[in-house]
Image 1 (cartoon, one colour):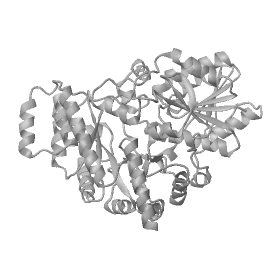
Image 2 (cartoon, helix red, strand yellow):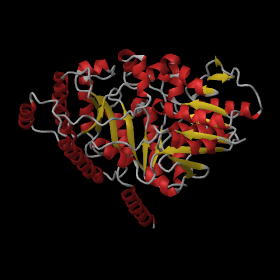
Image 3 (cartoon, helix red, strand yellow):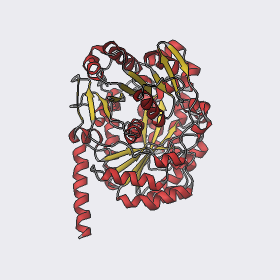
Image 4 (cartoon, helix red, strand yellow):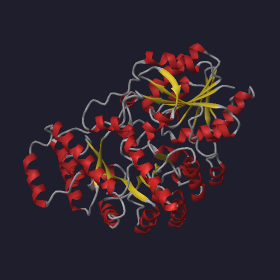
Length: 523
């Protein structure tokens, strides 16, 4: 049986996708993985982010031209099964691709998984044979077994099925237990039987180590646990929690499993850093984090937390993690005024945020300045409220930097359900989620804090300068400030040996230097 699994997320991270593929392979199925990339010659993560953040046209997504899909549709059409992993932003592309494949091979079975089919099942099932709701590892294996054995998809737990136009919502499937997560196959992290589809080149080519390292560098990206108890209005987690309360719980394997997974990857790839994309890494108990802190140093690596919530950051947890190799964290602050924090349904308000930044400040000699993520360009936020955020940031202990994101009404979130109509939401399926923020005076004033915290006198002076001109645009100033922030972060990162955000050649130079040092010390 010929099986294709296609990740449409335009990068090689695809953590959940890799776990689903690993589950299928561990059950005896031969799966060919295909990862969507834009122009593999030009569009690296660093390049795309640079163009986006500095205000240049962010146009590496060529996917609006459906005629670019013909070669991929032809390539996939000789299969027996195709599994697509997609977010809502790839919905229109996936629909067009499914239709083209079905025209070439009406008998092929198509199953969709990930967030879009889970959040919008009524839509996704219209252009597929089945959709997986929620966790897909076990569902995909059962689906493949049924297709292999010529059995009907009727009643397949955890799915909706479309059998000759008759759509059926099948019984829910129980989520994986901790024991099942402990026994599951390690994430599929390999070059063999992995391919990329370059939309710019319109062809499928093998994933080489050169492409792999150019996209990812010497970084291993993973997630320890799934689940989140919070219901932030800009996230679709609340829908998952409503579907099954267990989605609100942190569920994952043991620290020993996690460390073993990392060690196995180290045998095949040059790795210096691990980035954890958990929604709230510190939401676990102190005891579990201590066990992680005891085992992780065995890898000899440093790690980064891409997802932390101020509601769960504690001094003792930070001490355990920094001693184990934590060098950088990102934290979702979102706003610096309680009105917007309430609007976003954030679990931590300004009082808690202040306490959290005081804790983080105590570790300024152990890690890179933390990056606080902020949502701006909010049409429902007044200038006075944004000034409150600026004053709040000025009152915080440092050091810190900022990552600014322009607000976007993402499909499937509470914000879209409350503020947008169906037509508005449908329009978002064709849009990128991460828009560069507006280069107006007020945003530029806020972005200064990503570089340096101005003195009270300087801040007062800057406020007076932009008063009455808050919406006037200064794109060159925005570009200057962003580049200044990159330089500031680079200097800070070098200090702590964190090259995970640097160009690939820098990461490899560090990798070689680090291993020469390790070899010298071991002699």
